[in-house]
Length: 308
Image (cartoon, rainbow, N blue to C red; front, side, top):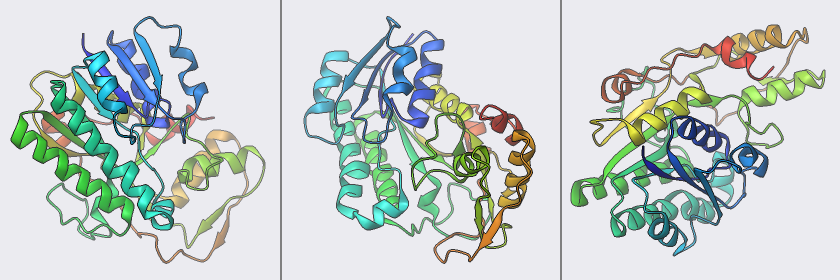
């Protein structure tokens, strides 16, 4: 069994990752400053003897060094981040601090304290509007936002660490993650949690444009499983992989499926398309299957039922 330090442990993906790690018998040190994470997400784990929690800012100098020195983890799963593209545009300095400088501090702590693995939460945003779908990891990366640029720079920093200092690094390029604990109150939340929130309140949501834009939606439980494999699996080597399903779903199909699951018959309204939106996004999951033995197994409808 491994000792894993998880940054962003109280967040959406973080809390699901912690849950699966604990179920696997691992010992966890979770850290979070509750900037976007929720104490309620961690409440079920606090009585668990193998779960330890520190409230701290992973992007503040010295914090991760102290946590790694005290806990001596075998691996760090780095999920703490500024998670909003619009916020990264409005506040690029904070984006750099949370999405790049924090990753540098993770790398420094790992090197200083003999951490063998780092699993990094990257994003499909690194690809920008690359039209060559499905996107493979070798596709050109031309980010359209400070968020995507910081994720790409952080990947490079960690891969340099792997080359020069022997730390095994996995950069997980998440596509559109959905599931329980995704916060619908955030302006930057995923479209599924926003749709669900409106339907539960008997309010028709707005779809920007014609609704035929497509995304690769992946269930958070599958994403957490990919993180666990990368952090604890045997014979895992350094690399970058899409964490996706390889299935394109239009917003219209998404909405009709969610409406059926929730038993709501509200027709959505349609507004003007947003100029900044990418029309289609779809990942190629082959590399994750080959290098991690990971395949997403939860269907869109089954995932949506967990949110009903």
